[in-house]
Structures are given as structure tokens and as C-alpha cells.
Amino acid sequence: MKLSLAFLTVCMFTSIGAHNAVAEGDQPDSGILHDKVFIPSMDAVCAIGRTISKGCDAIRARKVVNAEAAPWRAIGRVNFASSRIRQHCTGTLVSERVVLTAAHCLYNFPRKAWIPPQSIIFVAGYQRGSRVAVSRGERFILDEREDTGSRNFQSTPDRDWALLILEKPIGRDVGYLDVMQLDHSEAEHEDLILAGYSGLRPNVLSLASDCGQPLARSTGPFLLRCSAMSGDSGAPLLLRQDGKYRVVGVFSSVVGWGDGYASVSVSAALFMNALHPESGP
Image (cartoon, rainbow, N blue to C red; front, side):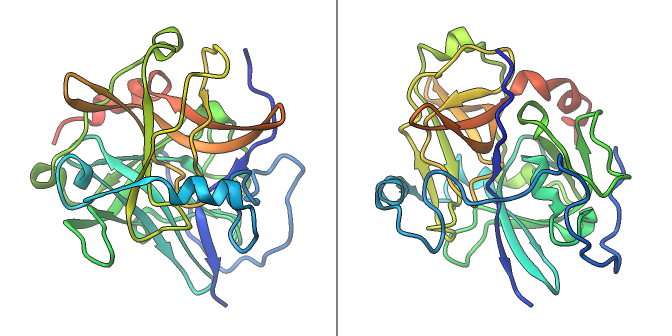
């Protein structure tokens, strides 16, 4: 099945007044460049500033974990701030210097430009203002079809992944999570969870354990019903196996599905080839 629905980005951003990344620059906000640009919007679960009690209750019900303890300290916030916005997503150390997150987390929507990697800060084990480790980005890797030389961001759910390469190998001390491929048929027999910094509770790491079984078989992204919202973009889709958590995908977005919604996570199979060369120190 090919997912063709329009989808909603769910990085958390607030207005405040090797593929190469382009600089922010001083280009004016000239409006949508064309009708295919990937635009953030209210999500289908719990929209900030609005009363959608059922969805918000599901976010509040997520279990909060100790982000300073293993293995959770390998997960953290991907932060960016400029004169106009502050935004955060979720990211996961999958090697000593590699953070897995969503591609749209590395794009500045108000400026319509890719964020310089040095302006992105990964905070591992973030919890109520404290942190286990921190590093700036050095470069990032995207799907080969993505054009960072263009101001347009028109990603699709099957390529909304990014590898943020850090300046410091903080995973050497913090630890990192292994990545494994999981077939969609295998996922039907597993209990998958998301671990992210939701916009409703941005200062704690919480687990969405209500993902359920895949809504459809696909060779592309996983379609589940995880309780996810703004801030959870880039969150790892996790499988617990033999007492150990492994990353099998990365959360991208939310789409309408029937009379409800589906959470969309990019399968590890779609970025594994890019990850292998970067897995060393």
C-alpha cells in the first residue's frame, strides 16, 4: 500500500517575535512557495491551545520515565531557537555521534530554509531542565531524494527521517540504542511503543504504549494508533525484545484514518543503508 494522504508535521514550535544544509539567511517570509510544500498544522490527537479532551487525556496518560537512567538517557530533545521561533523535536542516539530524528525537524518553516546543523542542539536525557549530555550538530544526512539546496520541503512519510551527526561522541558515555529492521508482518505480533517529549509535557520523556497493531500492511511506514502530538516528531518507535529496547522506526506525523487517525513512523529498513557508514566513532 502506498500512503498518499496529506500528513501533518508534529514538531513543537513556538513563535517568539552528507547533504549540505543551507543557512537561515535574511530572506523574507514570502508565503507558500508551491502547493506541495510540507506545512506544519494542528495534529489530530491533542492540539495545543484547543480542547480536544479525549486526545489530550491519552497524552496525559502516557507513562513518564526517568530520562536520566538507561536506556532512556539515549533519547533526548532536538532543540532549535532563532529570533523568530523556538522548536523542539525528539531524537535518539543510535551511535556514538548519530541522532535519529525526523527530517522536518531540521527545517525552519517560517524562514523556509534548512537549519544550519551547528544551530541544532541535542540534549540527551533531558528532564525538567536537567540533562545527561549535550552536543551541537555538525552535519546531517537525509534521504537522497531530498534537496537541501531548495527552500521547499516536500518530503513524504516514507522519507521523513534524518541522521544528525553530532560534534561530540556523547553516546560513548551516555549509551545508544540499537536499530533493527522489523517487517510489517512481524509487527502484527509485537507491542510497539513511542518515547517522546510531547508538546503537552515537553519537559519529561513519556511512553505511548497504546500503538496497537498495524492498521495496514505496507512496504513503507508503520501506521499505528500511538498517542502522539507536537514535540514527538523524531521519537523512536521501540520494540522490547529479550529485555532490551531496539529502534525499529522513527515517528513522523499524524494522518486522518477512517473516523480516527493514524500515527506514521518511518521503518528502519528505509534508513538503514544510510546509518551503517555512520555507525562508527
